[in-house]
Amino acid sequence: MAAGTADPAAPLVLGIESSCDETGVALVRGAQLLGHAVASSVDEHVRFGGVVPEIASRAHLEALLPTMRRACEEAGATLADVDAVAVTAGPGLAGALLVGVAAAKALALALDVPLLGVNHLVAHVAVDVLVSGALPERSVALLVSGGHTELLDVRSPAGTGVGALRVELLGQTLDDAAGEAFDKVARLLGLPYPGGPHVQRAAESGDPAAFAFPRGLTAAHDLRRHPYDFSFSGLKTAVARQVDAHRRAGGEVDGPFVADVAASFSEAVADVLARKTVSAAQDRGVQTVLLGGGVAANARVRGLLAERCEAAGLALRVPPLRLCTDNGAMVAALGALALADGLGPSPLDLATDPGLPVSTIVV
Ligand code: KG4
Ligand code: ZN
Image (cartoon, rainbow, N blue to C red; front, side, top):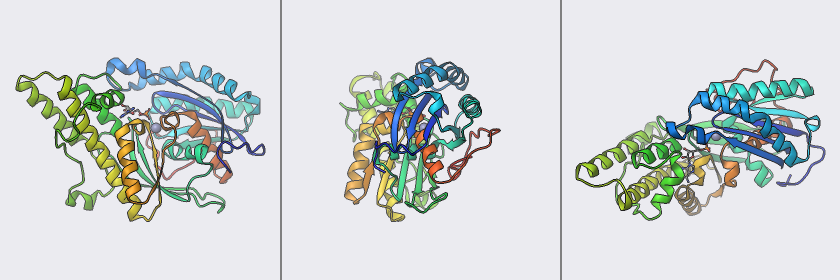
């Protein structure tokens, strides 16, 4: 089915996302996104320099119904039209997940439609359906956000029927997520939260070769044990040391220094992400790479990955940014895929799972 094409026979799936600080609701029919609304509590976390789980949970509670109304309005649909309710069951923040799952259960029960508790990480991959019409039969997905950094091997053999979608975790960060590293480095440089966009802006006038920051887990002995895992805490410490040394030498943390650190740091992150993603695709004989998560907004991450993929003869798919960051459309898209794939429904006493493994697509 082509992206955006209406298939009137396909069920109308309502998707709810509440795993972190975005409340997302969307309506999807087949591969068509009909309506989509997101409310973010990011402004409420600014003064804490990171997501505060209790604040995020309360914000979801307040935002859920208005966001659902907006999504339905945009789709020109009412809740009575909904054929299934999909919701993020994990991984994510325990309290935040509970809000979305409780709402989804109430809706499914009241509307007498199936409930699908789905995996947030797999939903980041499934969103590609709304852009491309179908997932590639085989792909490597790189998910990079404030909460996650994962490399996944995704199999979606067309037309093979029940439960064909398979996802395998190839590697993940052993410490900070990529977006978290951007946020922490922004803080070291005196830039506001969330740091990614500010670091990117500062990096534009900087020299990416000014500082030789470490590329975590890329030495030969690390690659043997952790070929597809990431580590960004050493990089963050190296930036902190550079900033300290600069201050001790009487320098101000501003202007060209901030620009050079931002550019060199971004280069190190982009280099490791691109290197490991291309290796994973090559090692596994996969032709297509998918990129998702808020850090996909980073020009250098996208640019370097595109460059290296092209050099390696790999196709790169990057959904539009509003679908890369957390949203309800990805959850509805995975719900629709799961229904078509014969997965689910989930029981009405479905439990949230903050540590849900990526191999579990529907709980
Ligand atoms: O996917 P997302 O909106 O939310 C979750 O973390 O779940 O991702 C937010 C993360 C933050 O850490 C933010 O600093 C980072 O994505 N980010 C960026 C950029 N825009 C957002 N990182 C680097 N460069 C950017 N332009
Ligand atoms: Zn996410």
